[in-house]
Image (spheres, helix red, strand yellow):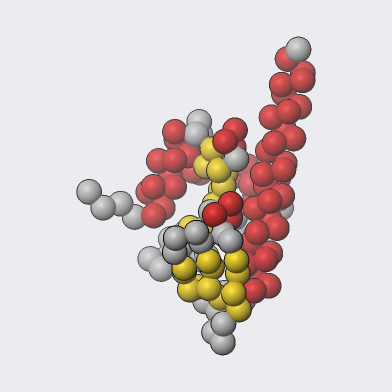
Length: 122
């Protein structure tokens, strides 16, 4: 059965312990942004992804930064190089780097929160 990418992301969030909507609300609160939010699918396993455009758009791709090996600038957009694939997206290098930075920040915030709660329980 084929699923839309957003459905797969939502299922992953549920398996990771929350809803997609809950993750989005948390990221809006923690990161103070509203568009192209990274989604921590499984924070304890450091699995995060960001959309290339509005997740409601049919052409939206979900990027898992930990798998990117290289970002190549093209005449139009960029090519994301993964270990066994390439993906051309119509984003600027600046936008991709910004998304990578925001996603990294998301992972750091959540990692710090998890560590905080672990130390508070001792």
